[in-house]
Image (cartoon, rainbow, N blue to C red; front, top):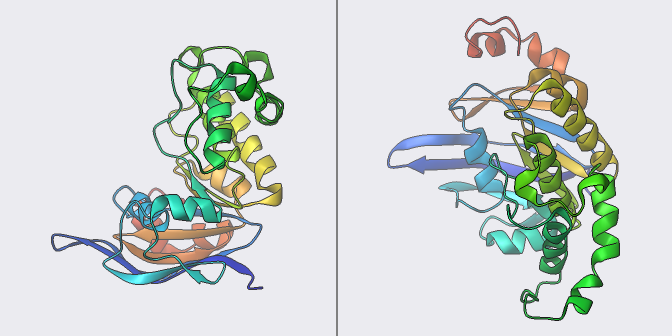
Length: 250
């Protein structure tokens, strides 16, 4: 079994002549937390959309556990165990925390949703839903409507719904965006916990989160890989410093 769970070869995406992702070769090691960082417009989210098949590449290949997934549909990639979150919270705002997680557990079954089934049938998911809710620190608000949650706890709920799909690899797009220090610390601890038996690839702007969580970092700029390595390696790279407009850190 390869030490790399996800690999790309010459991954490229062009939009009407604009090259958003340009020849990216990425290797994500199993059991690690790997970050994609870079200045705005570097191609990070486009790269995520390619990996999870919301976009098709102009050229290049994507391999997951050695299998070529380049032309698979997003749902097929998710069924293989690659599941992502989004920059904008994607929970059902007017359902409770437990109802959100329960729907995600239904989705994992691969059939149609059971909205028309009896409440007794849906209650069969409650034990696992409550366990996931406890894992992300939301037990005290399990029956609160999602729209009532503070932003940071809403992101924790989104991670719970993602975990309900039992992913082997988790892709997190800006998991701490828009959060205060307390929520950032809570979500960072949560990511570390859920990564104990999974691989995590994350796009993240908060560099202290990257430094504290990630074993490996890939820096993108203008769609290309600029540097790769641990935090000390990339943060001391002069080209990386320049890409961050002379701010003195990566």
